[in-house]
Length: 558
Image (cartoon, rainbow, N blue to C red; front, side, top):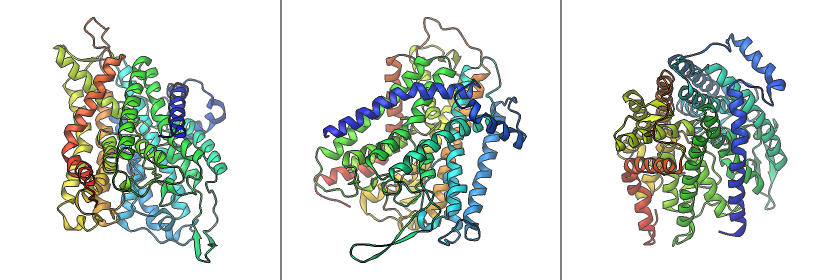
């Protein structure tokens, strides 16, 4: 690491720690209905939404009503984005005259953006019209992120409630997350990106002549407005095929740094929001500290793997920003459920690529996606408290709420659902000829391409390892199923746990209560996360990146 690399990492860490209580406290005020900085300038818009949709902002929902509203809203979103892609050839704002999208690619993309995955089996500049990019994909970047935030807030309410069935109102939480958090943040962010050189225009693609006299087409479009929310909402879908490696999406070292910071910003701040709503800010800081410790530890391993000894020259790093920034970006984006990439993950060293997969396989709880990272981490928090209770022979309690069979069952279901999709999807794809036909590499690297695709889909990340032709009927359908299950088979158990906790009475702490706001608990939480991830995925990782690393040391590549 060079001195500028150390300064960049230290600045990122300092800003993240400093901004977490500021943004987290603001979000707590938003969802608790308290006055805040945007109450007056944007309050009218919230009221218009309620009036226009017939929603009562005073109505309360139990967990089943909350879940029903959430599923209904997201299914409608899938149908809308699917139809928009199929019909885009006949709709306005299509200056390049791109055709309608195939049914299987349209299905995959619709599920992808609604589930906050943003997996892309297509090139945006040649496949999507400006209208589809804005009305379909960018709008889902907002509401899919808002959905994740709403679930995290509902879980915090459930833990804080005393003998109640209410988790709040999904429509109110969705509206407030969009209007007060994501919208103003994205507008400010988009203006910054335009100032850095990101394109934002409705003009047709530009024709250019290179110095050698060759003709070149420069793709344009309203990119900055999509990139701002794709980063802030941990969506990750690129306006252009090269994503954040494209100079029109990520033109300068400053834009690259701010993009990395913005990916972690809301997920980190939500730990403070959770602590505020649950009335235990020290516990919120322990959750933040656990996430941060995992981030530092895994990043150190990735950098060591990439730089210490590598007998094979690995191409694909972002030369504009340097290899360090390429690895840092890759770790951040796979930790935070954001599919944005500024380097080819397939060209990372085998162990670094394996760590990128592990970041997703443990549930993307190292900050994770907006909302999704927090409620994913809370599953491990509850599991850790339960295991600690078993070890000392007493009924486990979490923040005064007893953890019983129902909560543990829901937690296990939520943890197993994406893991099952990853392993089953990979297992089927390594034996079916139609799946193997899409693999570009032989041996363990080819296996890693398949494993990474299903890991990214089921974890709702969306980043790609590259090398796998996933835009086929088989992969589009299989990955769409993985994305849907990975999203909603986690959300529904989380809401069930929230509803169960809300109905419980709060027991006062006793001398035997296991404290969850200490470094000891943070260490135990890290151990549970790594053990669960290691036991589940170590065999698969051994077949892919681990064996590839050992063969690389013998100068063998694939």
